[in-house]
Length: 143
Image 1 (cartoon, rainbow, N blue to C red):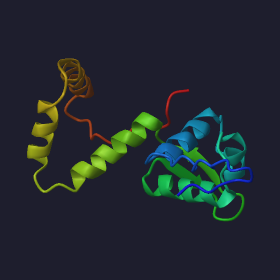
Image 2 (cartoon, helix red, strand yellow):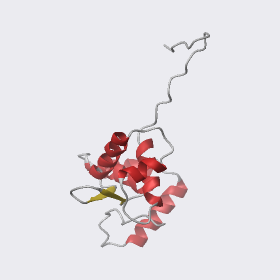
Image 3 (cartoon, helix red, strand yellow):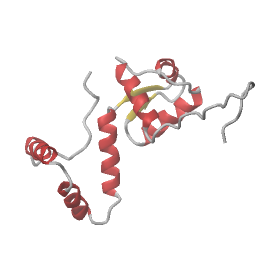
């Protein structure tokens, strides 16, 4: 259902972004900041044709996912990342796991489909974390 331009040329439809792609881009831009920043600051640095309200929506969704913090009640509201792109993926995985009634079965199935490298890495990370680790996401991403 492409529209035709003058001269018979066909317009190609805009590429639809993948799920989470904008969130990852916003987190990446926030990760470049040395301090909490405004949504306008984020918008200026995004390599996308987005409106201010779209950036606010993305930041609000990231806030609901606990991937960013929001400071200030009035204006300007300042935003800061809690998690980087990998941290956001981990938060999603944790949320999915939390929705399952049989966590043991889900984790067992997950481990059974890991590559041997991933399984070794997971074992190493679990050994490093120790028995007192709560599994909560870490603080700000490394710069």
